[in-house]
Image (tube, rainbow, N blue to C red; front, side, top):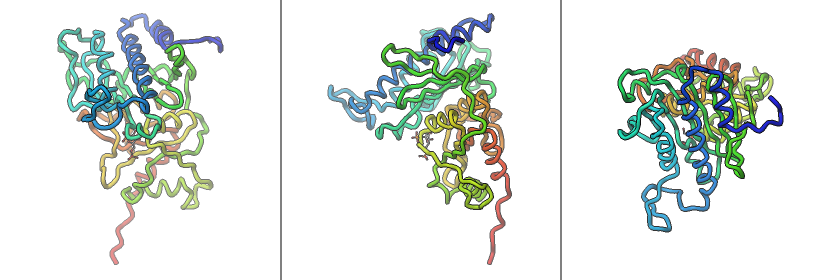
Length: 342
Ligand code: FDP
């Protein structure tokens, strides 16, 4: 590739499709529609401080209309950008309790889209980076329309995954299993341009850990020892890691993908299954991470191997540079210290 080429995301999607002569184009159209939804959301996020859209769903705006929270609004934008293309058989969103069928008046297709429309939304009011995460599977059931079974597939079956980070610039990063590619939105022309082809997590990575350390007292002894080790409190690491925690998963993951490091949201006594959602957050980021040379684990198993049982299932998450994820697993596997009795 010529280093000076300007490659839009549409061009990139078409080029990728050409490598699969059997492709029907449905897959490309879905990615294209996701990019369109991302642009609409990016425009609104940029205006978030200016328009009266923040706050509870029961507020009204200056026109006396009911105002939606930005995450609920983003959920609908994505649904409406993708419901009528004839490419999807159903969708599921972090913002919806049940699976979302394709409306009867539209054709049903061969793919399933799962998404978290606006992740890290507790950060919106403070102008901190937030993101959208998406995951695409093939339909596996025989009937004409999608079912919950089509949604409950393990991460390894994903045919594509990606995220959009709404930060100092808007970036869309995706994989279809042929590397991880990042596009930066040029707001002047309204196009995502290829800015980060073939992203690989750096090796050696920067020594960065990202975790909400306020939960320390609720962690298992192994998790506490892991962080003590990373801070070199136990004196066995030689050098302390740096701590970086935005508290917005997409933004924390994106930084670690570019610099190296590990993001952790472990189980704790308040959230025994962790906080993050397997289908909307952990699995798509795990596929991206794997494609970039990293790994994701729940502390024992590869995230991509977990068979989901419920749409909104939670999982502990350790994701990033493979050596750090292995380090986390080894600390978590250590037996808990015996409870002293006297
Ligand atoms: P948020 O609650 O702001 O939506 O999954 C949600 C998420 O953010 C992640 O983006 C973020 O990494 C995590 O929760 C932050 O949780 P804590 O506030 O418990 O650290």
